[in-house]
Image 1 (spheres, rainbow, N blue to C red):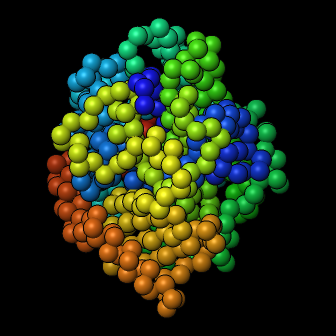
Image 2 (spheres, rainbow, N blue to C red):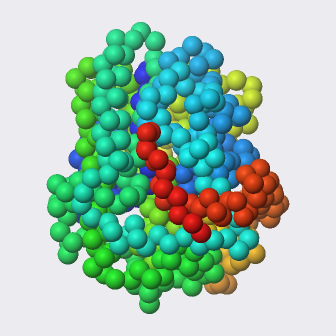
Image 3 (cartoon, helix red, strand yellow):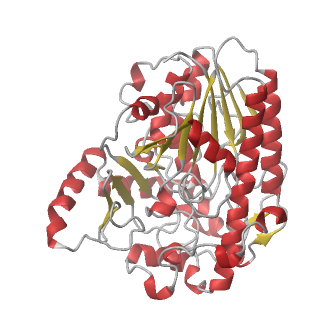
Length: 482
């Protein structure tokens, strides 16, 4: 494929299905929908870890979380393992970022030539409280959900500024002779769940579809999922009116995000950059939206682990949907290839594959892999997804198996049925080719215990408390005691 510019647009916590192109009946995302018409949409794309910091480290390095050991939101990427940005900088490409990175800080070489208005983890340490896996302090997330609605927030302002900066950057680089990469990272629709009033009002609450298994009578009975509900105090949220209000705010945030993306794409069109640039849009993970009595991310259900993934460019198939499973690790070789860069010897064992090649082929089987070692979990959780089934392995707790073709909402766990035992055995063998489930769980917990010691011990960490959302540049975090 001929070298071209690449703009990589990343959002934060975007539930894949809250877009027009992925089938939501009322959401207004005209810019992402048009992007999909001009390109290819991946219907089975996944994060490699359904929480911010590890997902972004995995995206940067093209490696699984257990390979790089950035386990949770207290292990921010620090440049220790080279990223696709490092690779392109070494080959004299312009590689710039705008917006949220969620890396350790500016003193690290993160692989970018410029980092414009970057959002890093708090104090270069992040959420160290999440490293306490044994009898952890619980967190009450009900306030953010119950207070969802219309208004303004620093996140909304930050994303408007990110779009402004991107438009200026594109204007400055519209005539560059050498291909470049712009990594544009928005923070919406991540909480706070506050939508601009004009977008909040677009969604009458009685017209918003309610999520699967939202009512207490329908909640799946699994110890790991019940633990998440209890840990975040979600069990106390079952009021339909509050849920609909929350959903209206989230829908408004998604439309607001789409508007910012549309501004950037319009600038590209005005400067005739759409003809010589490729585009990737995706998110670091999803959002549960009350499904199964859960909010936020953290789980391996579709609403949390699946991500939107749309690509476009002159040589990308138009208006095509690809069912082949992919994940964020596929971005590393794809970014390098898009601009004509070269992989080096140490990249030969990268697990990802070119999304540009996958887009050109017919639907293939393949496997997407994700893992979780972070806040709210007692033990490691792993996921494998092929085109038909999803397999979720919980260390020392029951597995789950879903047929996504017949049960896309994952309401029927097949793991106990005799006719699926062979399928379970096959998945377990595939999982153990990728990872030693219990061995990696032990390593992650040992690293987290070391992180606790490095930060003054458990008592000091509990006294420091936790914060709900990483502050934007210039904003101070608000800690709460736990």
